[in-house]
Image (cartoon, rainbow, N blue to C red; front, top):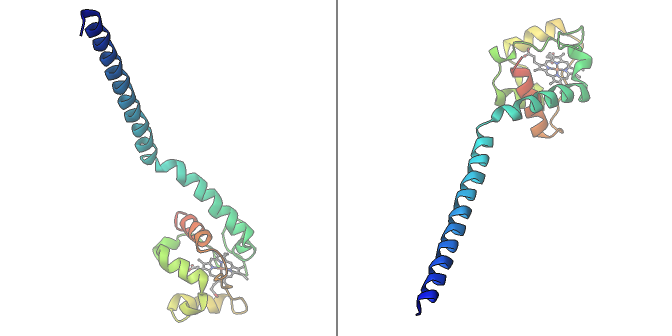
Length: 139
Ligand code: HEC
């Protein structure tokens, strides 16, 4: 190789190296952005709360449990549920309230609301019931 050829080759290699370096660092930034998003579950929370509240309204729960879930003559208040329920049990309850009727809690409810029964929501999407339950347990 002549001297100018060596120079041209050297400069070319330098450019390629710089180009690759730029690409690598750019990928790193993109990666950082994604991991940053995963560290922000807060963006998910409010949306699911709104949906839970909306679903309670759309499914007609408020008709019996009161507009503010404070209870009515047709159903008990739905606050402080986390003392008695966890997520899985409460979803199961909404799907099939009858299977819980033997517990003391529900014998009391039967006395207070003798003519009302809590409808079963087994035909609803479990994901929607999950949103409702997450909302209720957070109250
Ligand atoms: C027709 C009236 C009615 C409707 C509609 C209704 N409920 Fe109920 N719900 C009741 C009654 C009455 C009880 C008390 C248990 C019983 O007697 O069956 C109850 C009990 C409950 C309980 C247990 C409360 C506790 O303190 O353990 C939860 C949770 C609940 N309902 C959630 C819901 C949700 C969520 C919806 C809508 C998807 C809904 N209910 C719709 C009448 C209703």
